[in-house]
Image 1: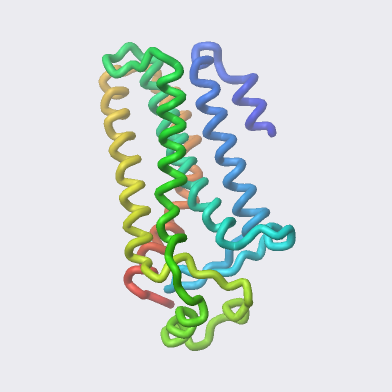
Image 2: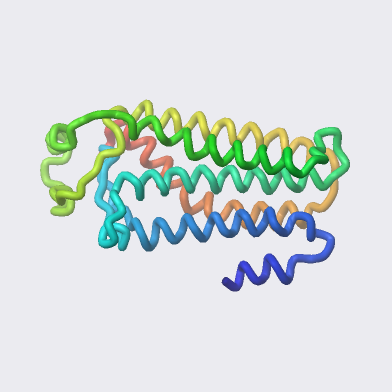
Amino acid sequence: MYCTYCVIEVTPKQLKAAKWALLNVHLWTVVLDFVISVLSIPLLFFPAVSGVMLGYGQYIGIPSWFLLYSIQALVSVYASAATGLLENWQNLLMTKWKISRKWIRILLNVFNYMVACATVIPPYLENFDVQTIALEVLKVVPCPIPEFFDSRLFFVTNNPFFATMLMQLKQLLLCLKEHFTFYTLETQKMQFKFLIGSLAQMMIPFIVFMPPILYIWFSANIGYYD
């Protein structure tokens, strides 16, 4: 709440046009944190992409697959919102890439969010038997923790390489968008304080989420377990 107040009331007047983009990034961060830390609290098992949800969502009838999808989709939406913040900054500058019509920018952001939510759907369309995959995992990890035998055990996919490649492709597209945005911004030599503040706001969640995501990618594809 305090951060929301600061964005709305304390943002300098010269950055007023970027205030709502900053607030958008912050709100998606809050939603993502609530879903992970309150509704889900996922306990993951490696090297399989599997786990058990321990959060309050299980007690109010939210399926594990929906909670997991929500986490993946919200991480992607947050990345899109962060990219949108940089695009908003670029649009405030006088460049040839400026999008003057507000409705076009809104449609662009909506499209980015739709793509972010859609790219994590394919693994959920697979049809596989959880018990069969669990037996395969027991060959690699013969003595897992008791929670592995919970009836709520879920598996994201039977093809982790496909799922992680989709994740990497999505992140690559976002990085390419941010790269070209940075190129335009750096050539302007303007508002570097805003750039530093924006990056600080975006990088904190990235620093928190990227190590686990990279480990999931490594463990699921290499089959590493320690």
